[in-house]
Length: 151
Image (cartoon, rainbow, N blue to C red; front, side, top):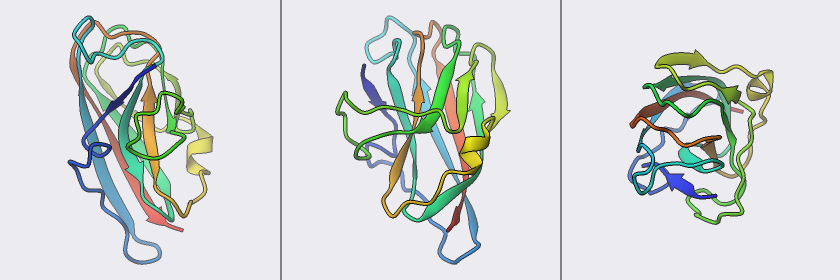
């Protein structure tokens, strides 16, 4: 299992943070996914570390926007364990926001799990990951639009 880091995890993209109680802000996280067998292409059980939930924030809603990524037949999207930005292969990815989401057709998908609306704020930053169940045979982009509010 490999963690493939996006711009946020690499420190190349800032993350907006709500500055007052009740504020809702939007962050768009985007990654280009390589096609197998290209080096760096995701294989089964790899995780794309695509974005972040800032400290003391909760997810209000989430939208997934993908190109055709043939081969990724069911991806889980959720909160990653461990320290954001770490490449430790022991890190895991939950399915709080999407479970077994099909990515074989281009499309836009709204957060599909009730659990995602109930994730509690945390005093520490948390990474958002996309766990891949199979290698992709077509390169393309995957984007996640996350609406956040303060606790």
